[in-house]
Image (cartoon, rainbow, N blue to C red; front, side, top):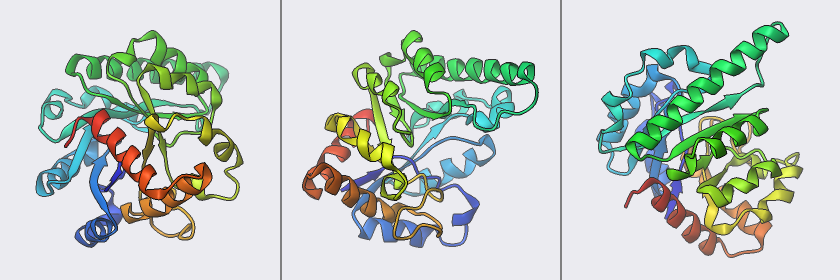
Length: 258
């Protein structure tokens, strides 16, 4: 049994063949799927997919790229839904910052405020958080440590191999490993992976993005967790069955699903 802890099944690229995508994944051993909340415009579709499939769950949240939608998102309308298992994906992303230094600092400040608001929402409703971090490790770590986010814990989605973030393993956080681990240029992640405690590892695809080898360049899908699993096992010189068992146990524990 494999859990894809981060898969955008609500993406338009699955509109025509979602049932087949899910069937392929199930036949490959994927038994649970978690749709992160990113763009509130897609949230109703995520809920519908979760309601139609007993093995699909969703999270409610706003990605840093979509923070303009934060003020209009009614968290309470979704967070008590029985299939809602987390808040996010939320966090900080400085990769696309543009404009003057003043404009960049203003956007950073706004991202931090929205990130903190979602952490507080998670704490209020006792849900883990799905954290997106890009080019913002130090600020994100400081926020997670200072906000008592360890009360609910969460996952560092698409973990970027920044060793500074490893301290969060002791503060209730897991590390989502996806297709990047199969890339030939992911040297830093390959070096850092053995330093992550096994009891803090999760598997994700981030599909339809970040397709693993040997399918890089194609649309990603949850069946490809099998390639990620194989690569992790090889790198850690551990049996695939053990990685599968541990990461599944970790996912079920973090997201409180059976």
